[in-house]
Length: 97
Image (cartoon, rainbow, N blue to C red):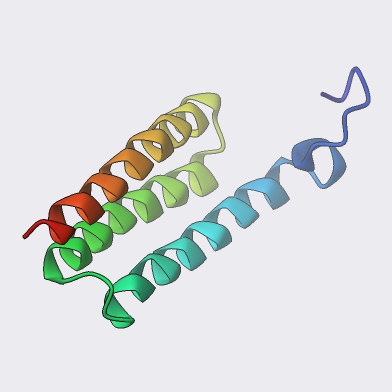
């Protein structure tokens, strides 16, 4: 991105700041995903799944923050895709129980 002048966060603010923001937003995501349960929209199946998935996401973000390597970044990215699919699946499952 830097070679072609695309202002992506790692180019503009640096890799350390990018990893810090990934961790921060992952923590915020964990809190936000609990809101549907708190609002009464979903039950305990959703809550358990969202908490477990969120904990795994946070763990991956912490690993990326500490290690700062491409493999950790790729693993977290791939997990984020799985996370979203499983969270939606938990919503469907909870709604049908």
